[in-house]
Length: 267
Image (cartoon, rainbow, N blue to C red):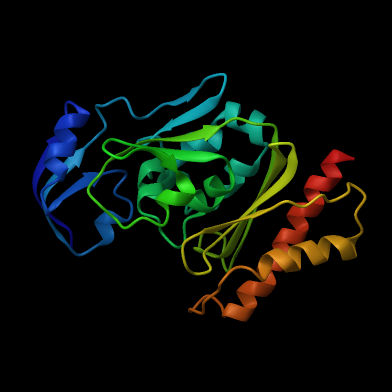
């Protein structure tokens, strides 16, 4: 059971940060996972009055506030125009609409959960996180940091002409993924670059960068070789949802499908 002694709706981010430095203080997101835990929280800090619940677009970036819900991600037309159905696909299997109306982007990213579809999807894009004390850092760097008492303010996706695909395999429709894969490609510094993230391995998502020049008319055999090469560079584990070998096989299948889909769109 989760026991909360004090609840504070922070008036400023500075106040929230100071309160959060206490050992038994916690930041309140959507509380979808936190409320299932067994902990005593001295002070629960609510960020909902700080304007962190918007998705803003500029000429160069999308800035997603930490208190934005997964449903906002799913329904954002600007993100759909930029990245197709990939981001919506990454969240639409997460429990149900009621859950996605409450679960926050900040909670999904800051928690760095091994099962996180959101983390897997955003990791493949040119994504940064903005921290109150730690500044702006790449999501790929943040993923591997040890947990601390900083506060995540926003997730920043830098714009670029990139193609994005996301797929996952689940045992049942709303279960955690057995494996999740995202593929992004585009020209970076004059080279064709492919960014591949794999999550629910069952460890947290990891990112791989490849400088492949795959012809648009590549054969199925060629695509399979690329997918196999990438899949082999990730580490997999075994749990109740599947074995390491099964996850390795599924990763290769999903990557092949995603690469094929991207090449088909180019033709």
